[in-house]
Amino acid sequence: QVHLEESGGGLVQAGDSLRLSCAVSERPFRGYAIGWFRQPPGKERDFMAVIAWSDGVTYYADSVKGRFTISRDSAKNAVSLQMNNLKPEDTAIYYCAAASTPDDYDYWGHGTQVTVSS
Figure 1 (cartoon, rainbow, N blue to C red):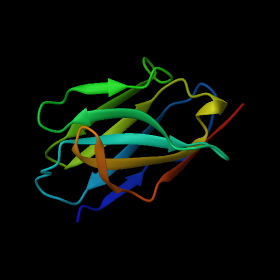
Figure 2: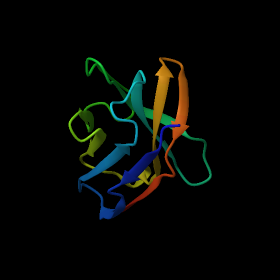
Figure 3: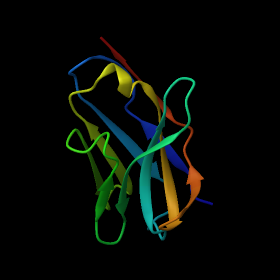
């Protein structure tokens, strides 16, 4: 069982930045990757970004490419999501998840709320 805990959410204004963090309980993490997802109010949860744990290869959804950056800190066993130039449409609950294979996200955190005011 892998436990994930998100932190860093909050209320910001459009154009501001936030840095989310995902703490991973398994040391060392033996899975394939850690991903970030978000669920806007009344909508489905969508993929944002993923980083492969072994080599740091990253992949982003088109909607956040160039504004969001995912990174990992192996020493802290954590993954961060740096979000710049935030927009009101970025308002959502943000979740991190652990993947055992490229297609299987097995463990999820409880989420952290990000609200962007215009």
